[in-house]
View (cartoon, rainbow, N blue to C red):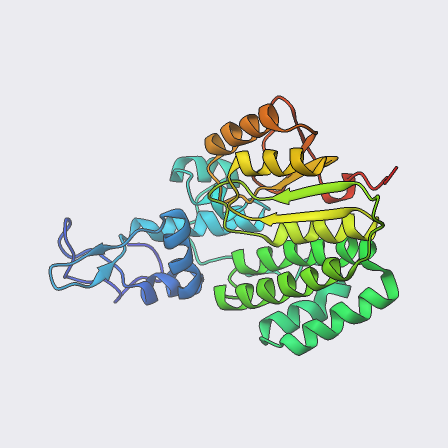
Amino acid sequence: MLPGTAGQRSTDTPGTPGAGLGIGALSRATGVPENTLRTWERRYGYPRAERTPSGHRLFPESAIERIRLVVQALEAGWRPAQALVMAPGDLRSLVGGSAAYPPLARPSHPHSPVLEPWLSAVQGFDRRALSTLLEADRASLGLRALILDRVAPFLDAVGAEWAAGRIGVAQEHTASVLLEHWLQRQWEAAASPTDAPVAVLAGLPGERHGLGLHLVACLLADAGWRLVFLGPDTPVHEMAGTAAILGARQVLVSVSRTMDPLQVRRDLGSLADQSPCPVLAGGAGAKAVRGVRVIGLADLPFATD
């Protein structure tokens, strides 16, 4: 038995008699909040609980070491989607040793000090404070600098805080929803000349996340482009058809890390074959395929001539 697990064993679990941990015991043994463990299980399939004959959900004791290794990988900069699918041996090699000891002390926020008020607002579910910060920096920096120097780093910081267990899914979702609505108002309010170049913005079939598209929309609208915002989960033929009808200059696709890589490659390749104009893809799940240019936010073409 690993240190810190005495008194946490259950005698009611399938498979190996006398072995198994409830989610509270697993949380205490690893230092990872229960909500984070539940989210990992739902999103990435690990840690996976089994049901006992009486209906209780129990995790194997082997999950303690593996999760401690995952925590070290996250603190080294790996993402949950990467670390949680690795085998224990691969994780040990990755972090340079075993994690069969008490969890590491968590560092304070490794983020720019300017983001601390933003993160504090998220931790406190303070939508008004976050909106005030957005408006103040919008006025002082302008929309493009706000996106590149504040919002994009802030989203990375929120993801890191969630991975480290310092915020929960509810706080992450609260921030994302507020940002998505706020950003949409910004690009919708931007005026573009009647002869402005047209950009089609969309997410691939099956994509559920639209925040990246709103970041792109703000940058292009601020540069004078006319936007056709199709949103997430758009059929490939609809993107290409819309671009053809409107004589679009570009089709821009945002791909989140939740998308299946093989499907992303197939859909982007199909879009490149059908689109009458260049296809640009960005986001953590974007893949380089023939006919598609993978870009970051700062790489977007801002010229309107």
